[in-house]
Image 1 (cartoon, helix red, strand yellow):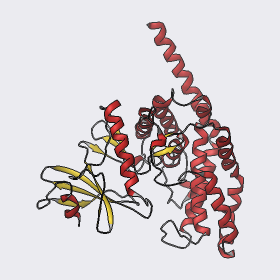
Image 2 (image 1 turned 90 degrees about the vertical axis):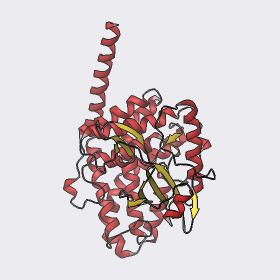
Image 3 (image 1 turned 180 degrees about the horizontal axis):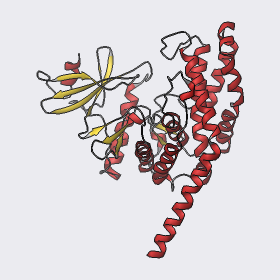
Image 4 (image 1 turned 30 degrees about the vertical axis):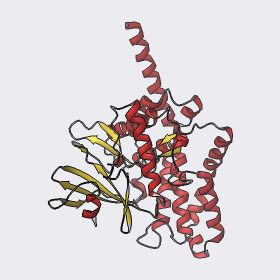
Amino acid sequence: MIEKVLKAYGIECIDCEIKPFGNGLINQTWKVFAPDGQYILQKVNTNVFQSPVDIADNTLIIKKYLDRVAPQYLFVAPIITITGAGIIEEGDGFYRLFPFVANSFTVDTVTEAEQAYHAAKQFGKFTRILEAFNPQNLKVTIPDFHNLSLRAVQYSMALKNANKERLKTANWAIEKVKEYLWIAEKFKQLQVENSLKTRVIHHDTKINNVLLHIESGRGLSVIDLDTVMPGYFISDVGDMMRTYLSAANEEEISFEKIKVRSDVFLAIYKGYMEEMRRSLNLREQELFIYSGQFMIFMQTLRFLTDYLNNDVYYPVSHAEHNLLRAKNQITLLMEYTKSELEFKQIIENYETQLESLNGGLSMNV
């Protein structure tokens, strides 16, 4: 099957070596070692992305725009087939092929603040460089993906319909969620106020969706563009907060290990704002810390909703898997919220230093 797919790109794989690549949970990925170079081949998960052609169309329209306005920007777009398609349907699925970027690597966990800085800078740069591009020209690949209002409604329905046993087991999580419902109410109010500008947003800012330079460690580009669509900056910043700040990921069951790292918070702020400072309005800048609460709470609701719905969405390995994930995220939200004053001070100190530095440079000039 794979050989037939590669042939559509003009690659004869008599001497190819094909190996599974990465540890992504959504799409199936291989690294292809061909006589003429190295490639990344993906099979799109059509259970998640029900219209794979929309993904290809989005990527193609962005590539055409960037080729015109920012040809120097490293945009890792799928290779076009012999017939001019950005994605092909073969057998039981849809496939696309990417060039493998030489001298690049990815990491699965933020182990040092500098990694978070480079990732935040790359995600910020991606949105900034597309600032003049009309996001409404993009197709929505996952409807309501980061619609917290909808997630809150889905959670309420799950509460009403859940069986008594699961409701009882989840009681602690349910009671904790009540304390943070203000986050969903605030999001609803922000939409009423029209405080958030719609932009081209990545929507999946895990650290392994950034290519880093193998020698310097600096950021090269963002990858995994399936969820690129119209959205709000709080999705990208919030997902970085959710997945970078704690060394323990969402599968950790020893909740005492879930702590937020202030140096990583500063790195996210510094990297993202270096690119997006002039793009974000003052109200949006005030929401930088809220973005983490927004995403952590939304993921809490998604895990807890799935548990109450008898695990119909996320793969689980045991009966309380989703409940433990929800408790994990609640713990992260609690730690994050306890650090809110510290985060504000970190931002204030950084901005003061930056203003002092810029003032000094102006005088020197």
